[in-house]
Length: 140
Image (cartoon, rainbow, N blue to C red; front, side, top):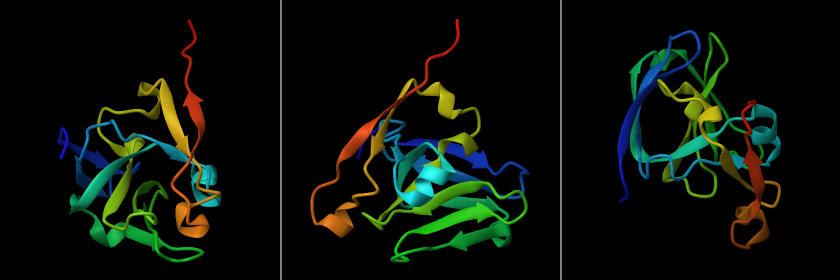
């Protein structure tokens, strides 16, 4: 296991607070092109099973599943912010919204790999594919 970084985080309104043990720090940040991720627009980092601990507001978390119903997405029922989800391609992993982590912004990452979720490996039988790179270029 890589460099585990434990971070605290919360939804926008603060009803949901959690702790996430990032398996490889921020080396796993990414975005995805699937229909749901494309609309959600979050930058995520990976957390192994058991690596997310809800500190407060578990009753405020709402779940959403679609299509194959193998991925489970969690968001605050009060403010609507997506906090994390159980991954479809590897259900032993969770992805946490880096924007919910205390002191972290998705704009802290100048380049974010984008995975091809439209052609998901579970649908195609082929290995995961990188669709591109999202870049943030700060104004001078």
